Length: 327
Image (cartoon, rainbow, N blue to C red; front, side, top):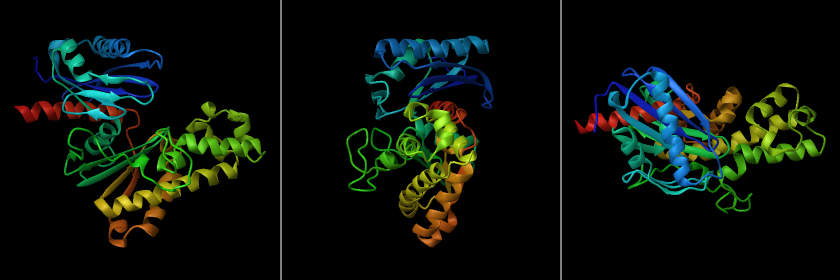
């Protein structure tokens, strides 16, 4: 395979979009291409669009396949990291997707895949809010809730797959049902979907007039930005719903802090991007109350800095790590 190491590609496969970015050897972005995902397309069509997205990014950057050092791809859902296969994508309905082999065949360079939250947290560790940390815990509340841990520069993982699925932690035995059908998980109680469902009820009861104007009672319109704007415009009930969710999140994270003693906790995802101060303050206050004092005092709770770039940066850096380690 070609391995000139001049450029690296980071790819992020999200639930609603796919993003490919070309980076130079110093990980400065050269060009990007973004496409929407299509929930009704099959694996073959999806893989074709992934390849086309990377191809278009390379065209924009004005570079050839021969100049690529490697490609890293961040993907949702359970993965077989050794085989380079996406086992299942919850939002797209794909099964057993041979992504690594497809990328290596299409571009003639090494490729790696990683969990998308692992890649995003690794991006923050290498280039963002957690640089220089010994142990980084990443928690990303959004449509779901993802978690990751970087320990002494390496992603904490299982035998074949990623780990740190904090969104599936049991919180309340009689709580709402999650997507996989489990009661009272962290995700079912504190994700944006869970928050939006409570906010929609507040709108229906006449308690959130600003949000009514912005989104009505439609969950699909209650994006993180709309919720944040409703708070700025005086919807006190919406603010309390979100603060309560942040406190539940903080209580669960406090248990993880006791287990891992991280020096940095990075909070990211759409909800945090829209309301960073609210989430950082509520989660930190809850950790201070619930975690062991020595561990609570040691952890620095910060908002992610890189936004959408975290995933592609982390994935590209993981591709470089994989190539360098084999030399």
